[in-house]
Image 1 (cartoon, rainbow, N blue to C red):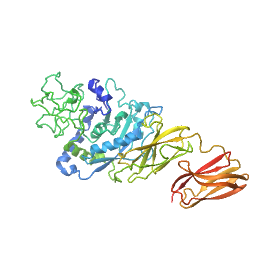
Image 2 (cartoon, rainbow, N blue to C red):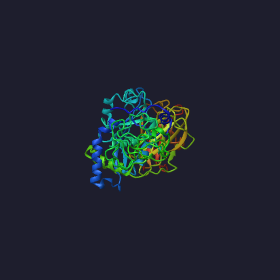
Image 3 (cartoon, rainbow, N blue to C red):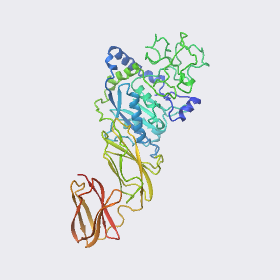
Image 4 (tube, rainbow, N blue to C red):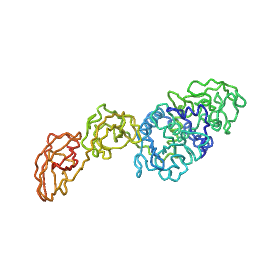
Length: 515
């Protein structure tokens, strides 16, 4: 595949630096022409069968994200950004009648975090590794630091679709939920056979501008050998992108830095002033408040989705429903509280309707922006965290999600940890012990302990905040087997610690009450 190079200038610079940058993709005219026949067939299908454009119900498409890191294992895009991107992608394609859902890989899980390779992260020379990780039944998105084909100089691209490998590569700074960032929606349009409205002008560094030869009359044939589209639409089925409801565009975005109506005076080969669609998702205009696909673009993508070329995409997914996050989502630890042990902190939140998973993030700053952030994906409404450092304050937040809905709000709290680990010094004479049944669904549980000698100890239970909720002082442990009953009546469902403390040492076990 050849990457179309976008030469550096004031426009390219502004796009590279802006968080909500307008898309500049690396798909060349030659790349797009490799699937030209498929697009033509899709448009013929639309003409022959108008039902293909019926968007009364969404069609669901599986997608898979590869979160690529460098060879040291750092620089990977965060899962929270991917969920935001899922939300934005579905918003962009809702008018089309297509919705996307994340699918789990049987080996690599819901998010592929197994690629730690400079020749994928900084370029995509290692296509063998990328192919080995590719999900066979989904659209594959590889999120890297640089979107390139081995040599990105002297140009710069934000993302690209490769027809040869049928996957999408995007820079990690383009993965976010910003409504006017069309990078991923644009590349996904290429996946579904769409071309640039300015097809044929990709190799031009500036597009058609007053300094171009023949100005203001555009040439009959664009620089890359594609017929130039006329304003009256008389050659719209054979020129440029072959989509008749997108206006002529000769890469005009490079002559202005925003989404304002184009008024530079360019004319088509017949001498008629042209009027491009500035906010079209497949164009390049920057900073539009909303990017859209035209009805014919939408119909062509639906035709492609339902074509034999896309039979590998499973469309039987049934979404569980929209997620609404309650403002009192987080349960424990209480905000600002100190937990009893730094290496066994139980985080608990409310179960949320339609959520199948929960993204949990923990960091030492409330912005959750350090390189020390810890990320977990849980499928229940609690998580035992065992890898925190002592004597620190941590901020934590939870995002409920399911495979097709990453839009739920995040809510955060903080807690402090002390210097006490869960196991300090082994209690002398205590050989082995456990709490049974665990989880307990009744009002009683038992400590089953084996002792090498007789000793006396206090037995008590702590809730997740460190509060003593049951206390049994001066319990006698005898040499041999011991069975000590714990009364759980009056205790709510949740996570607890059972502690054996002889005054000089203590040991503990986790107990879950789930009636």
